[in-house]
Length: 378
Image (cartoon, rainbow, N blue to C red):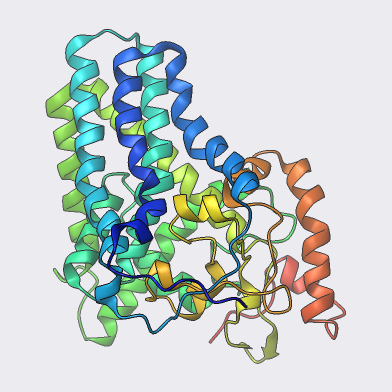
């Protein structure tokens, strides 16, 4: 694997990852112009970076994972300033459209659906980066971003359940082989919330505390979400709350699309008696598309993220085909394919079968894995 130029303190090293900031003025332009411009938000988030992937190609180089954090200042900064910018954008546009009334109701709905693509593609991705870090204030920024899309429990589910049980029957967001996205989406909306509640309850029980103890982060989640709903109501009344909820729904939809892609059909080997092999790079789909990794701050280097969850995004490593399964395209293209189940199956089922033959030729019966019927991990 080639070695990348080492991240350093100069802004130029981080600038490609700052391209996401261009969506902020674009959102303002769309809010003022309306009409056909509304489609520019999803086009910019999905199609533009998909096209750029074909222009700039793959990036299979790896930075030195021991790079000191002080050399990552400009990389980190974009994740830190995005939260305030996103909040100003969402609530500023909410005030503008409800105060001026220059758009009709359908156009306002479409605009906030487009804003949900922005807060889902960028906001939740940045929240994901921040929630894994050690400084409490970074985790607080993650909580604020997640509350702004009414999906705060994602932090508990992701940290306490997904990373521990990925690719086993206990992980709700490991998409099963043959499971279409829409069935997956309905399933995880319920299962992830319940899973997060149970995980936090178990954490408190180990400290001899009741589930309703004030230290349960669900109280913080509730307060933050109610605060944002109240702000939306103050700005735009019931319609303002509806528009705010619209962007939240589409942000969640975007998140779960990505979750669907990241581990589709991949399972850890059951060793017997509820024991599973350790998580390895082979249990996540890897993608080295350069431009979409700029947009998603290397989220597509997901195999390494599960190996080292608190590793800062500039230092995430990519893997070869011998170590981890490779997506044929970046997340933007793959999530669009997931919206059309026959297309998804045609692209991904041969790759899953190839993965099985490569890494687990000794497993003859895949039905318990496919149907999540193996014993729950201990």
